[in-house]
Structures are given as structure tokens and as C-alpha cells.
Length: 129
Image 1 (tube, rainbow, N blue to C red):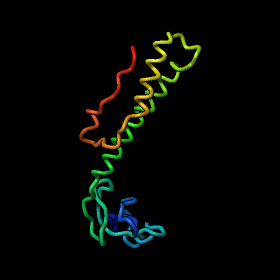
Image 2: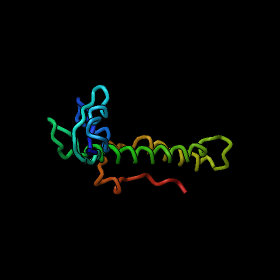
Image 3: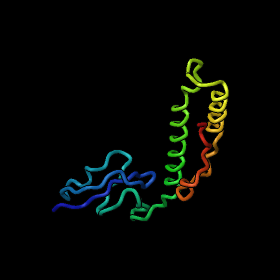
Image 4: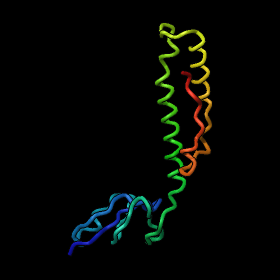
């Protein structure tokens, strides 16, 4: 008989994989440090605690993803403006200074308080025109 299975970390309870297999080989689905149980699970929203499937709090994980997105955008904006700091880039000294100050603002951004809920309201400095 084919059964649904859940493989999870013995240490954290986080779900590693799910699937189906013949009942007689279900135990073979887990590697060292992993446990297997019968069932169906959502590996993003659930985990296993004391052999029971429970909902997982993903708030901090979602907030970290939001902070990572802000940091990646900041890094992209810095990379895009690298050229403005080259001495042979065709802009005026005033424009070069404006870009340098903008880049300093980007590097000084504090995104440690960004959450999934407030990410879209993050205050970005305005790039020089």
C-alpha cells in the first residue's frame, strides 16, 4: 500500500521533504538526523513538534526576506551608480558630488526594522537627476 510521508529534522522539526512511497520502505526515506512520519504537510507553513504536525510561525522568516529584498535593492542602486564616481565619467563635478552624497545615503540606510508589512513604505533617498 502506498502512503504519504513527511521527512523532518530530528533537531528542529523543520520539514525536509514530503512524498509518497510503499509503506514497507517509508523508514528508508529519512537520512541521518532525520525522522519520518506518515502524513501530508506544507513544508513552508508547518513543522513537526513531538511527533505532531503544527503550524509554524513564519513572521520572522518573512521579515528577513523583506529585509533581504531591501538590501538587494540598495546594493543594485549602488552598483548602478558606481560609474558616476569614475573620473572619466562625463558629468560635472557638482553632479559627481551629488551622486557621492546619494551613495553615502544608500550605504547609511538602516533597514533593520523593515518588516513584510512596512517594506513598501521604506524611505529611499532620491537619486540625483
